[in-house]
Image 1 (cartoon, rainbow, N blue to C red):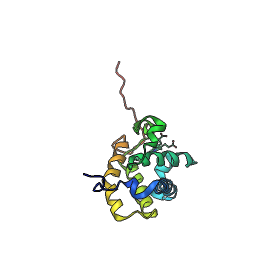
Image 2: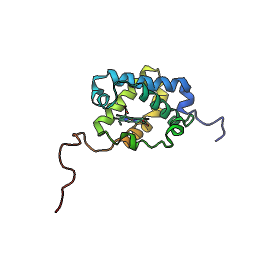
Image 3: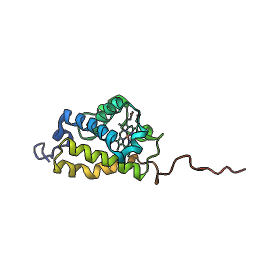
Image 4: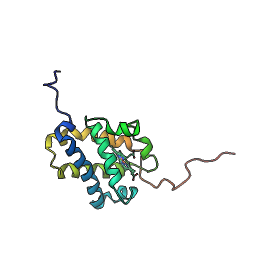
Length: 145
Ligand code: HEM
């Protein structure tokens, strides 16, 4: 496919500032939505730093320069999420924040459709358990001997 025929990336559609706005709006939504209260509680009170890191991540993930990779040396999200219990309910709260953030920044239906599957996949990759019961609710390992 020639450069001219290539579909635009989400980064090209939104632009550098548009991606930053999406990341910022995402956490504003998380801060406001009652149904996102569980995942909001996992985050620091002040969201400035995570807004910057998420913006850096989304920039590369959406086809722009690999800003997050340049800072962290990896794009793997397993370690930063490891301390938190993220099941299907938490994943779906996260996706609901992203849907609302895309609405608020005025993303086109075309862009929303383009992002739907990949957003689900990346959120489901961050999921690190199958349910949403508290991590310390019972023994994970039965000691033998
Ligand atoms: C599936 C539900 C998710 C939950 C509940 C969740 C929650 C969290 C929490 C609690 C933190 C730590 C924040 C802090 O240090 O204050 C974090 C960090 C982060 N999350 Fe998520 N997250 C989810 C999915 C995602 C997804 C899908 C992405 C990317 C598309 C993402 C990108 C990030 C980034 C870039 C950081 C910062 C990591 C760093 O400091 O290097 N998260 N997330």
